Each structure stands twice: as C-alpha cells, then as structure tokens.
Amino acid sequence: MANNITSAMDLPPLPAYNVVVAPDLISWLPDFYLSILAPTLAYWTISIFFHVVDTYDCFPQYRLHTPAEITQRNKASRYEVLRDVLFQQLIQAVMSFVLGMTDPPQYTGMEEYDVAVWATRVRVAQRALPTLLAVLGINAASVSKNMAVSHPFLAGVLAGGHYPFLTTELAGSDGIPVPAFASWELLVAKAIYYAIIPAIQLLVAVTALDTWQYFLHRLMHQNKWLYTTFHSRHHRLYVPYAYGALYNHPFEGFLLDTAGAGLAYKIGFMTPRQGIFFFVMSSIKTVDDHCGYALPWDPLQHITSNNAAYHDIHHQSWGIKTNFSQPFFTFWDKLLGTMWHGDTTLKYERSRAKAQEFLETEAKKASEKAQ
Image (cartoon, rainbow, N blue to C red; front, top):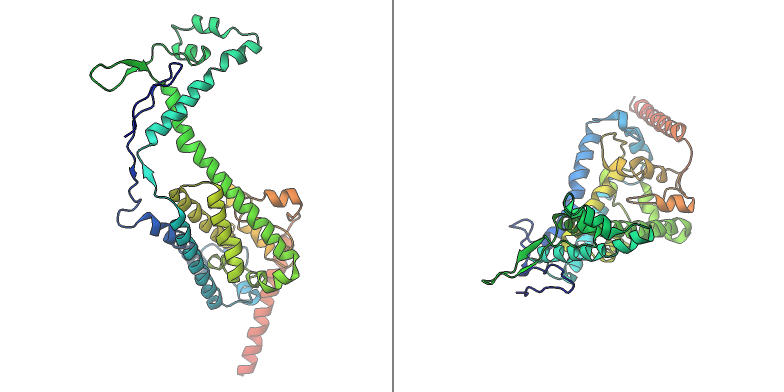
C-alpha cells in the first residue's frame, strides 16, 4: 500500500493505491490463451463471411473480379491455400506464445494514481501560462483577479494553476485540508491516460508494421531470388479472396507478417490487452484487403485508401510493381513514388472478358469431346 504524500508547491496529493493482478477479459479463458486464439478466430470469422458472400454471389455489383476469373487465373487450388494458411497460423500461434511468455503480468489498481500523476502534470504546465501571456503583453495576474468571482476556474488557470478554493481532506481523524484537482484537470488527465496515450501507442505500432512490411515487400519484388523463392507463392493468387490473405511461403509469412507484427507490438510499448486488439485488427484488415470486394458500407475500406481495391491492383500483372503498402496506410507508396496512378476500368474489363471467353471455349471443347 502506497502512502499519501503532498507534493511541493501546494500540489494536490497523489492517492493511495493497491496493485493486484488484473482479472481476465473472459472469466473462463486466460488472457494468455486469448492472445493466441483471438487473431485466428477473427481471421476465420471474416473469411467465412466473405466465403459465403462469394459462394452465393450476394453482391455481384461490388465484385472486383468475376467467378470466372477466380477459376481461370488463379494458379493455386483452394486446398493449397487452406493448407498453407493453417500452417502460417500455427507459426503465428507459436510466436504469440513466445510473446506472451515475455510479457509481465498485467496489473490493475494504479489507474486512479496514474490519472492523478497526469493531473499533476497538467497543473504544473499551467504555471508557464502567466509567463507566456506576459510575452504577449497581457498581465495574467490582473485579468485573473478581475474574473475571480465570475469565472473562478478560468481565473485559476490564468493565475498559473492556483485554485485556493479547491481543497479536500486527507484520510484520518484530523482531516487536514489539502489542495485538490479541478474537475477539468482530472478530465484532461483521464483523456490523456485512457485515450491519447493508447492512441499514440497504436499509431506507433501501425506505423512500425507498415514500414516493416513496405520495405520487405518491395525488396521481395526487386530481388529476383527473393521473389522466385518466396514471394511468388503469394502471387499465384492473381484474384485474391478472403481466406487466402495469409497464403505465403512459410518463411515469408513469418518474416513479413508474424515477426513484423510482434516487433511493432514491442515498439509500441503496448500492454498485452492492447496487443490482443492490435493483432486482431491486423488480421481483420489483412483479410479485408484480400476479400475481392469494394463494399461501400465496409468501414475498413474507407478509413484509409489502403483497401481491397488498392491492394488488388498489386496482384495484377500490370500493377505488380506498385502499391506495396500494407496493411493500414499508403504513405510509403506516396512518399517513394510506388503508388499506381491512372484508370484501371478498361484493364479490369479486359480481364473479365478474357476469363469468360476462356471458360466458354473450354466448355465448348468439353461438350464436343463428349459427343
């Protein structure tokens, strides 16, 4: 149990706290195992949805490719894709196990204390305001005094975080009055602690993963041996579909996806639960990018310009040297000039027509042979 302490310069005291191991998100499933299972469950949940959509041709108007193209152009069978994806996910599970073993236990009980620490920083930061206003020729002390009655909290801010009317009592029979935080200070502190810091951690992890995948992905296209030996397997799917998102050579899958995501997680200094969210969202985004549909109501296809239509261009023979960015943003393609520019409508129309013509020719040959 930590003791109450009163900081110097009339700062509010930091609250006591008692740390305990955080309960599991799901009472009957430890977080350790959830971190291993959740990304795979998310992958197959989204994949099965799109497979049903494919099978029953629910949204033909939003297809990037026709069923004829899937049959005629892809060089890997559904069985080969399923086999390699399951093996890749086994590798991911092992990596998740290793990461989980390196993570310390997640504790709870310090949240109120941590919020108070940030509120203290907000209070201390206010002390610079009178000096900053003085540079602009504003007498903060005078302004603060004039509005002390009508707007006491604003007056306290202008006075450099001085709120003499805000007090509380220390625990104990004597109940000594001590300074307290303003409600807005606690609100800002909670926003920083519960929203802004996790958002920054997620942004760092996403940026790290995008950077890792962009340069390795591009390298595998620039180096003939790397492409032939490893990456060409993924491009046997000229017409991507959802559950084929992780159809890779095992070495490439480990290096590009599994190791990249694990490294991004560590670089972002995420907690294990933040890691579960990050890995689940990465899996869902990867599936969505290979789903083969430009769905107007799919939020993942509108958050950034890196979506199924964008990545599909990379899978075509005419766009294979462009659109390397994945899975979240496209900034590296923009910065380094590898983004596809131009209309693709005619190219897709020719591909559809050619695939349909091929299937009709094959059907005609089969019919003639049967006769």
